[in-house]
Image (cartoon, rainbow, N blue to C red):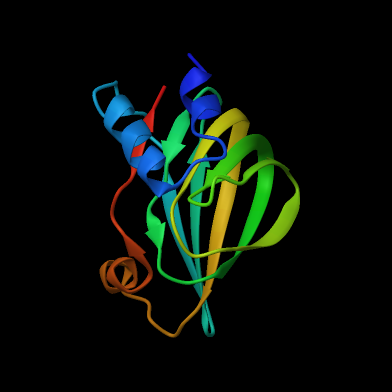
Length: 135
């Protein structure tokens, strides 16, 4: 994996994420299994992202709680902030879109407060679809 793409995106604005997304969209896409969990007033979206993957995430409309159960990754937000995230950890994610390079397979949860249980409706309520995943 050529990590120059993710390194180049550090310290830059959201348009650089768009450029990264365009560059990787022509590459083979990676399967990242997603599962959905519900409890009273809680929705958890869980994804597993394999090591060696570059991820351009969906645009999250709201701040929300995140739980990284396993793995290690570098995350770059739209504001250009670069952060290494190592499991286990729990943190509040800002609204917006992020990119990541997955160093060790990551099991990650986005946690939302909602009574909604229809995944399609949740998708429209919580995110804008712009995911791209590559090896």
